[in-house]
Image (tube, rainbow, N blue to C red):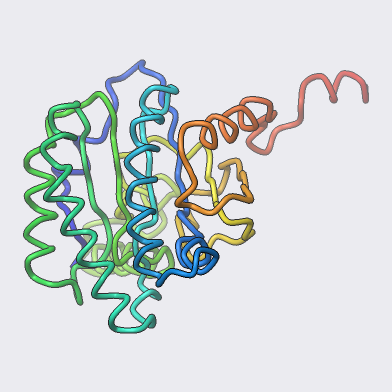
Length: 257
């Protein structure tokens, strides 16, 4: 069962006519950051939580309206049991320590991913975070927890297939828009920019459908060192991009005529 409900997703819609800037981040490099300092990986994950707090604050100040961060993937369960336990503990600590502040600061929090496998107390915390912040609209934070894009796409296909089998929809009427509306990310504006830290150049099963026309920026900085200046650098790169969404640049077309 996916985390969150349709009501939670609808809360993420911006008022009609308002512009959005949706940025997603693959927060990579905690383990290497700790290793460089002769520390265990947990120390890097703790520093990564601090980097997330800095980045959320900076994002709102720099004009980002929606931010999606990759906190824990469906593949991360393959990590050592002690590390997974530490990561879950950090998530608990983050929600307990920061939820009230995020609520006061007008942040709407949504956590997406699969409920199966998560500790029951974390599932309860997720529901509480949704309920406490659902009416906020200053900034929208989406956290991908126990999430995998391929699994999300498969689940959407299953839902639509069942609806077609039940005669609720015509298979011929399924469109990219209706398919996207069946994903767990339903209700968010289109993804504009996807950032990955630590110098790696891959998506790692994150927002595969949503990233169809997103711009990518890969930064050679380990996530615990991330903050306002790093995010501003990525946004500056994004601002210089010419987004054509499959069309021909008018200037280039004129030169070729």
